[in-house]
Amino acid sequence: MSFDTRQIDDLVSLERGEVDRRIYTDPAIFELEMERIFARSWLFLCHESQIAEPGDFFQAVMGRDNVLVVRQKDGSIKAMLNTCAHRGNAVCRAEEGNAKSFLCTYHGWSYGIDGRLNGVPGHNTFYKGNLDKSRHGLAPVAQVANYRGFIFGTHDAAAPPLEEFLGATGRLGLDTIALRGDMEVVPGIQKFVIECNWKIAVDNLFDWYHPQITHASAFQPSVLPSTNRLENAPVEKIDLSGVNMQSGAGLDLPGNGIIGTKFDQVVVLGEYGHAIGGPTTSSTGYFEFDPSWRENPRTKTALGPVGCKVGGHPNIFPTTWATVTQPQISLRIPRDPTHTEIWWFTFVDRNMPREMRDFMVTMACRIFGPAGVLEQDDGENWAQATAQTRGIASRRIKHLLNMGIGRGKIIKEGGLARIESLTSEYGQLWTYYSWAQWMKGLSWEELKQATTPGDCI
Amino acid sequence: MSNHSQMISRDERIAAMLLHYEVERFYYDEAALLDAHRYDEWLALFTDDAHYFMPIRRTRTQREMDKEFTKPGEMAFFNDDKILLAGRVAKLKTGRSWAEDPPSRTRHLITNVRIVKDDGRTLEVESNFHVYRTRLNSEETSWIGLRRDLLRRTDGSFQIADRKIYLEQTVLLSRNLSNFF
Image (cartoon, rainbow over all chains, first blue to last red; front, side):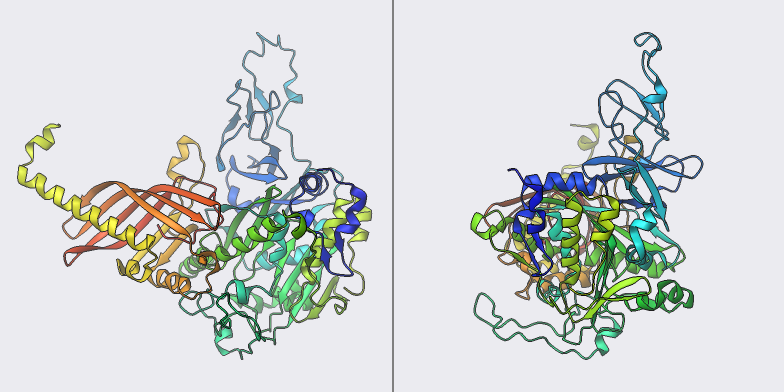
């Protein structure tokens, strides 16, 4: 299938809130995403706590490149491509661990943990010493940077510095984890595969319209622990008239879920496509196991007046979701147009009492991940939404993201652009709109301009 | 035959066979309950203090095999007490548990049962499983692995006090784990 890149503007309409369904299955579009998004953007690799000791490594994914993120003897962190400079074989086949060196098991080229080529079998005999080892180390990732413990990399040497790329929106997103304490990743990254397009998985994180239906079976006391906030909150059910099950029976919903019309939301829109969307911290829909970190005066100052209000889900464009219920990062890694790997990183504060730590770990296993009482019902929606876009007639129908369209007044304050409203689809729509700008192959300066929020959505 | 098995008496061997038979029968009945979606009865097979744990497995080098699986206190796929297992069963029965409606079709095959330890009150038992699932029209999942159970003797039968499930996968090759093992 070929794809004319001049048609990109036709794929996403910010005015109508519509997306062309071809973007979920077209292999040519996927190839272009690899080139114009995943080979350029800063991408989350891992957290520094995962590789604490010299030689500790974690294997990350950037586009389709496998990357070794390695703690160095001097405490610094390097990231390099996991491919031998000789004939391409992977020099490390473990997901994580500790290494003294990386050996290519094909011909025995051996690299230091800094990526330097140290040993070549027969260097004198076969190469007669003519191979310049200094030129054939493991290729470093073009740029690597650390924002408050989160390690990011980009394949583009011309990409702006990480903090500038993140901007106020992206930094606030990561701060909602970093500011909770001395954060570390709990051992065990949950990894699983969903047969869906990566963008369907990403847009769902801003979607506060679905929990009450998709997750209806989870919102009962025996499954999810209630928070005091929810028990005391006045629950005002949304209008379900005419909403019937396949049997014809009306759909009844449990009373203590994320539900109600008094569900104040705030959506923050950022340059390069970052966004945060969901309930305000004072709304009945706001759900967090341990919100005490927000009370710290220093945290309040660091978050700023707008940041204090934001209780929704941040996404660092393109694929890094930071959760709110408790601090986790969910990466949505595109494998092909219809397969996405989900990786969950779970954070705790090192200084947390043991009991609280155990609670947070238990809740992380319980809520998200493939067996999570919330996430186990998500995959089927995403897989089916992706599968239906294969049909020629079904594909002609637009994906609708027009909830609240035309009414989203953008308020600019404290370096952040936000929309205050009820449940909406502004966060998703902003992500798709920004995706289209990335897909045009603009310069970094043009891209920043094109993704600077205007006055209204 | 090893010297060891020649030395134990015929009566002891018959007792071991009977015990093995009882454990196997317990597992076959359990599998039948799961495949028939009779989850309340399945839940009753667990003690009130039961722990149900499926660790995350990681591809690591041979010298780091001690860190292949995560341990309790670390992240896992399942880390449930009986209350949560009961919650999962309640969730399945709401009629709104969409990942299981239409229900998946499963078949639990339990083999290679080995009684590893028996202190008279509690048995430590290992078994291999193959859980085969099909879903909707063409979706097929196979999970193969090892279960390591602590079975507590009750009146004439057993209850599961602890179950650890070790899958032969690192990246889980399915979209969810909406079934039991």
